[in-house]
Length: 178
Length: 343
Image (tube, rainbow over all chains, first blue to last red; front, side, top):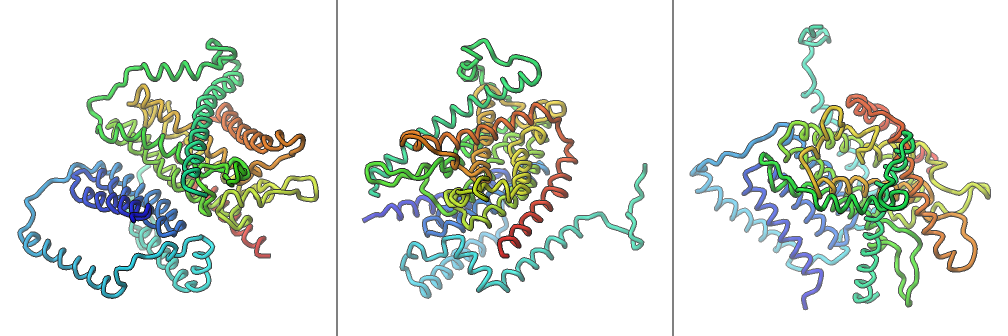
């Protein structure tokens, strides 16, 4: 008996895989970025099927709505052109493709070995926002706060790297002509 | 509820909501032309029908029969997709908005919204509207025209910046209601303070409401934040190269977004469908819808009023206002609300 869950799972799965393949095949960066958005949206659908509605919503808001907007923004700003095709290195063909296949098989084997082929039951992931809030702010409070400090450090690093270099005296390195 | 009636109810609800929404979009345009006209000592549309009421139909027919130009220098797939993205996501976000308490029809409890009452309703609206920015950004980029590109860049920078303030301004309401479900948020606003002032969130959360109002104007690219289509500098911004129905789709998306924003403001800050209800049972059933519609109308009127009154910001002023004033204000409001609730 094919359930509607299975059909939806396959539909979202196909969209996600097709988007990922399209991301690699497309030659224009903006098409690749848009394919990545389709992948993110399809993943959100899969989360929704598992009953993880909050994760699905956050996936759309954070990845599709914020991070990918910055990607597209950067591509637009730099006006990145069409990617040039090269013949590809022989090393990549000889070792890359077999290595990738081997790696995928290895990961699949480990996953099947350790968690079996049983389907994840609906509602296995924490769904409602209050449950996730409880988990984040009670059980995993320390990792959560440490992560926030890590992100803060990353932001400050980015600001330092992007800001104009200053002289030891603190003034601007370049004389501003007025 | 069995699947058959469920699908039937969903289809009927979708058809009704879409019909009402598209009509509302058309007549918001009419209202804007009329109100702004009167504010500027003009009449606005008067020729087609009484008070120009059939003007939206005439406009629609005109858009359909205009020549649909596609300039030769555009990047065609995205040039065509961009207006579709804009209008689809603008119309989708209305799906989670409840218009009243659930009603019982033929033994089934039917919620007055297209989706069932999910506990992430508000997040869904934020997510869908945040994807809507692609329509504007891609339109600007794919037109391959410097004014369009500038408009698209401005739009995406502006929307990403103000989305943070928009999200934070809503968190105060969420803390007070303790739920993402729009039904719960409205239910939490029933009753009165001291017996006569309605318990609407706009009273304890007026700072949040102010932040929401400002951020929402910026998100929908309306005056005083309509920099992406600033006519004096950018011809028409991101939709310079669009004509006929493709242009109309951007237009529809803008007004549909305005209506969604007005609905969210009504639900979160103005008490949703709560209001004085009395009279015979039929009237009692209709009045909540009436109050909801009336509040949305007031909010839309405010939009138009602001458009008729304020000039446009400069772009650096817009960014400074968003990051240096609105965002800190929203954070202070959030902290204050959290302390008050924890007390």
